Image (cartoon, rainbow, N blue to C red; front, side):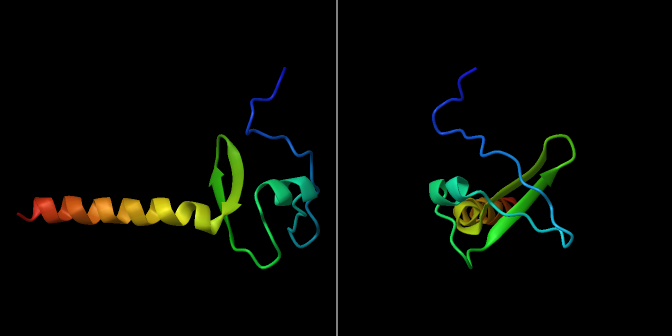
Length: 77
């Protein structure tokens, strides 16, 4: 089975005693993750854990909050 372009399997990592993992080098390169970057850890009881750079979701969060504010404004009119 071929993995679609833009999708990756980077291998496995082990969780250390303090709950830490090492993000594989190739994953850090592909997603431009550098020391000191802030990451968001998301979880779903069915699908598991996802990790992404905080700035990736920041734009979507801002757009979502704007939409919520607009809907509340429309309700008050």
